[in-house]
Length: 539
Image (tube, rainbow, N blue to C red; front, side, top):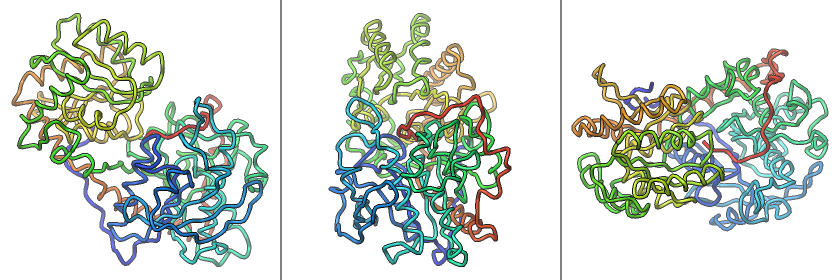
């Protein structure tokens, strides 16, 4: 498990920091469906603070275009293959971050979710929408770019930008590009479960050569996979935690890409995401009933009472209050919580449960039924409420996050920062960011780590947390250990700069083709896995 000391910050030399084009399909607070949006806002800001010359590249959804300050038109992008013309806008977003926005109303001029319509169906033109994003990302890295600024690194994120490394790789193969400086590509996987797989008949409309559609390229079980394109053609691959980087090189979390990822293991690493420590600061959080820090933990009592009131729970000081803020899916382990709760209550444990989230209707119905069966002890609000999520983190005694897999996760970091020790499974970023409390060895942890995914094991871990909570000096030590953790972006941003340097070296190598290093037998996905339909990421 992770040690509670903060990570060291890799050294950076400002004079050698690369120019970076950071391509992403969403950004907090303008367009958000998951953790990718948070990363897309925070990581570039941290890299700019280090001294990187960085531009964001974003699709021109209405909310994005409206949110750009100092907006101006800088270029017209001509139609390409089956994709329409677009206008490239420049400006600043989220304060001072420089950005480039693809204004193409035909593809992006629609309100709501960036990936699905109002009834939850994928937009049928998603391959063209994100093909255009990928194509323009690569164009801006080439000698045909319509603007003078030229990046040394193209940083792509998830399947929505997965074709960009492929476009870049085929651009490099042109004879006239042989002596040109190569822009290196880095592809970050925020959640491998979402592959962006489409009908291969779309290949001509995307403007990629026919040879790209093979097991040594984009083909994935008879589909054209944007995700596989990024994994295959990028100069370097990162994912959002060290443990997840290991997990995806084998079954079951490799989702059929494990052979390819293992073959590219020397160009794959995991870098733990950070959090926005200004937005998530219990000492200044406007959403709390009472602000506090590690020296004023008794002030949390006012937040605890406010949570109980909002969720319809009894104002019981003797019951341990657990909090949940989550998508309601089996991946998140919500069924473990609901399956274990009746038995925990039947054993007479003084427990309360405050849940906020939405998702799978079966699970939300079960949560509603749990409230009915345990009035005053269980509360549930179906939906998402940002202020309430802060209040739950600042008011619950402990936070439940028993995810079956979790590439990184953010709530376990928020909860430690807010003095609510998390109960997590030993997977992905949860394993890298939470250290298990182990009084037998004399080690004070920052939370409680569950090894398996059984109801009995989860219940036993809840009972272990309850025993610690009832020992108030021990509990306060756990709280303070978590609140001392440094989950800011500085160390991670510097680690990405080191990856950029490795990617630049790889792109400058004699072959200059990332795919050349892949064993032929490693490119074909496992026959037991299948691609998921296009879906938003959850980091």
